[in-house]
Amino acid sequence: MKYHEGLYIDGDWRPSAGTGTIDVVNPADEQVIGTVPAGTEQDVDAAVRAARAALPGWAATAPAERAARLTALRDQLAARSEEIARTITAELGCTLAFSRRVQAAVPVAVTGSYAELAAGHSFEERIGNSTVYHEPVGVVGAITPWNYPLHQITNKVAPALAAGCTVVLKPAEDTPLTARLFAECVAAAGVPAGVFNLVTGLGTVAGQALAEHLDVDLVSFTGSTAVGRKIGAIAGGGVKRVALELGGKSANVILPGADLAQAVRINLADVIRNSGQSCNTLSRMLVHADQYEEAVELAAQEAARYLPGDPEDEKSGLGPVVNARQRDRVLGYIRSGLDEGARLVAGGPDAPEGLPTGYYVRPTVFADVTPDMTIAQEEIFGPVVTLLRYESEEEALEIANGTDYGLAGAVWAADEGTAVAFARRLHTGQVDINGGRFNILAPFGGHKQSGVGRELGVHGLAEYLQTKSLQF
Ligand code: NAD
Image (cartoon, rainbow, N blue to C red):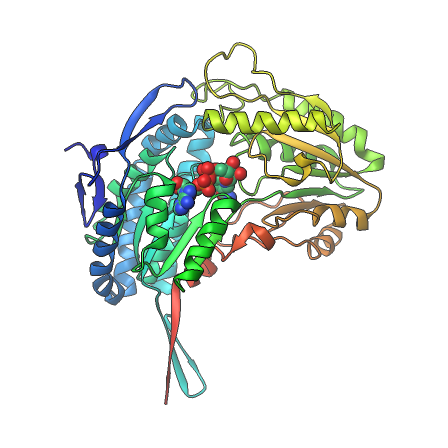
């Protein structure tokens, strides 16, 4: 049996109990590039049983051995990174350069970081007359989205394995081929049978069955707030642990005196690099009234530098969005911006010239956006930047905090102290100060409707551990 005909359960590729399949489409040329099984409730049950059976052995494995398997997994991911990058570009549509530099490379670093954490972490502590053990939570159901197909998987699977948990993964419908490569790497890394299992399938079938399964102890979900809410309710009903990484509407606040050109340039690069499909993307740019028109002009100039095109072509500034539904959703938001009176200064709802095939969206910049507009409140998940004007720092703060979300953000100021003081008042899980870089060891996760729980680093590991205290 060819690997893609099967599901990876209990250390083996096996056929689905059902006959349904999911076609994987390349968003750049709209061609089917692969087919995977649409796993059923029975398949999920088989995978959870395998994970449950493997749990006692894996939980009892010395942390140093778990670290060794994670090191081997990191090496596998590194050895196959070109294949992974090409697969991600083929099923997601982001440029190959971005796939190589971020989509394939960051998961290698994250997996390596958990190898180190597993080896060095103290899984017990002494508190007064108690010894407190940090034990694995148990069987993890991981449900992941398509926008960072491998990163979202390693963000969950690596800490879960480091903690001694076993896992059933249900990846997004659009990007299962990357998940399949990951399963091959897990197998090649010598991770024991049943410790990691992969069931491809529909969210409403396999995803839901996994979230509802009574033998799953923790559900870790990344995706839309709408589905996250459902998963949270299901987990609450089953009294199981839940981690939710949901949407965002992050603000890039440019305070007077900041390096405006750099702040605008980095903002545009941030939004456009994955065609706007990042949960932490800086989709709102807040600029003081005195510098507003200058920022609008700079943003329009920057947007023009990114030409949509074949993501495998080095000259392309951005690839298509993931599928036709996502393109239509983004175009719907662009139209709503026009209808609600925002000023279009770059891009727009028309298809880019010379690209009749593929789900392309032009890099789009809106000025004169007010906080009440739909495009200022809802997650667009496309290459669209909105510029909002403020008169005072207090107003900037009110606008920045004035959405249901609170995942990320950025502050630019003339000096770090001013930026930090402002950042401390933002209701959000992360803030980049004057262009601060992403840190794979810093806790990542949301305030408010952006989610529950944290990923990455030692905080991400803690999600997969529960305590037991012995008193002496
Ligand atoms: P989604 O939430 O529908 O899908 C995410 C994952 O959940 C997929 O694996 C999907 O199969 C699964 N799923 C769907 N319905 C389910 C259910 N009822 N029970 C269990 N699992 C289920 O997200 P999407 O449709 O891929 O994207 C829609 C929007 O979500 C995007 O436009 C974007 O706004 C947002 N999104 C956010 C992130 C993020 O990182 N925060 C990632 C992807 C998408």
